[in-house]
Length: 170
Image 1: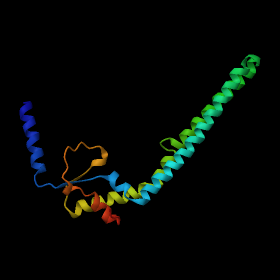
Image 2: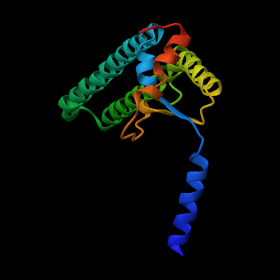
Image 3: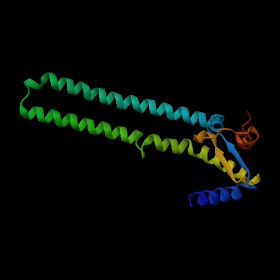
Image 4: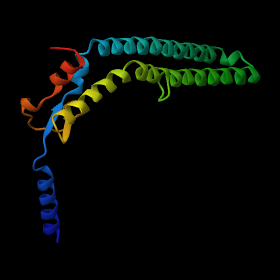
């Protein structure tokens, strides 16, 4: 039964594959050859570094507050200890919220990435679709996406064609 099922699947795939045309692109290569994309990535890296430094500075402040609390703890009343602990907990929550605001899924960095990079990626994918339609291709693989392609014939690589249609030459 398994052998029959395997044979049917193999025949089905073979029938589908006959007459189909395939190609591939390397979107990482394409994007890295677009100056606007490089500039956007540099801007995002700069923002990320600035925001990360701000978050780390806040965590350093919390560490200093905690060390100060530990040094003074024996001199404090129970009420003062409770207040300081609450203050530390509040500050840590605030910093975590700041970190989420910058780096979370709905954070500022992701919003900036969508604003700066998404239009470039959309344009690239639009050109890829256009090439697929013009050349009657059934499938275009992306080698940058980690697809395990053991061999690729360079004549089926459409990466430079995409760059040319976008107005960039290599």
